[in-house]
Length: 103
Image (cartoon, rainbow, N blue to C red; front, side):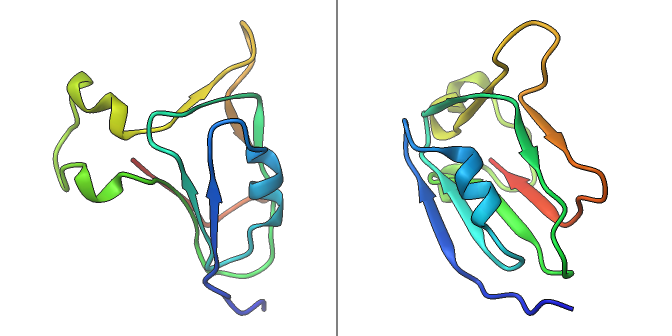
């Protein structure tokens, strides 16, 4: 079993999101810049261990907890955009687990 390491990976507009996802290990938090758009067909790879890899907005603390967001709060969230029709913006590799997306 792999021990969670609890590192933080900050990803700003224009940065390589897939590289950040690939380098993350159980216990890490990937913080995406609020309002930034990331276009691609991002793959969540299978990783050993049982710790969570969290992918979250840099403005997570400003989002309401336990209630739905509205379009007025869209600037507080990053956007994952599909690169084209019929393609997913986010998908999982076989056996991928323990990813958490927040905000």
